[in-house]
Image (cartoon, rainbow, N blue to C red):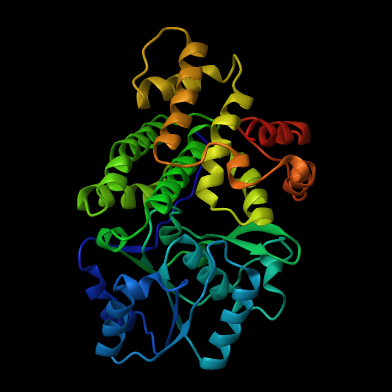
Length: 386
């Protein structure tokens, strides 16, 4: 296990009715005027918006709104949000929605105090020095953004989707009420499950091995595999929704990757798909993941994949390669059972931009730590996903 440094500063309020802490906690944190940011209106249809407004009004907290944040949030929205915060004297951001809304709000929080182009954070021309505090009201289990310092933003002008991160961007507090996910459509629930599992895979299939972290990763995977189908078939099943919501947070709050060099190849390859075609991130990950697994499977890595098969899928057998292949097949079959497309062609994607996407993926750094991927490897993964 490598040396590591850990701090988890985000305060979590988990469970039914926890929105009741919003107003008093904002007051405790010194909020005098808030930005309420959200997507395209689902929080108004499911009652979350009304709950938030009741809390703000009840505690005398003035606010302005930023609506219409896209599922793959744009840098232009970050710029608009930062400008609004400056003009309105906002000192706290409320991100009400899924990971895209929270990611966008983190980027806005950093851009508020930066006089240059906020895209500079994502191309590593500068680092985050100061941010507005953010709180998250989570409405979809997927990204773990409610408890980490990462953000992923799309630049429409350059057709790039890049990430950046800082401990400064971790939310001050987050409200996780599983009831708020009851109304999430089946396809979005499924994509969120794939996203959660992919986050675990990126840290599980990594080096060096770490016994506790790997056992925790297997537990998160088994939890999602058990509870995911229940949440899809029974959308109002509180326990299933709660299991998935907490699994999504634990999957990417820093614990599973401690002392390890995460791989993150599949995420970087998928970012090219969602940047170029604006597809749902979790759907792209579900399609690519089994193909990445087969690409990096060899005699050296077979043992880890076999462990995954035995401990997560309960596959029996003494031959590691056989068990590994069965585990990869089970992974793809599980995603398909959730109703997720299994091929890029089902999304209207052809091979015309694969070389361009491979070049773009490798523009800023090498890809893959569990197994380094070459340009041809990336193209092969795209092609095998058709």
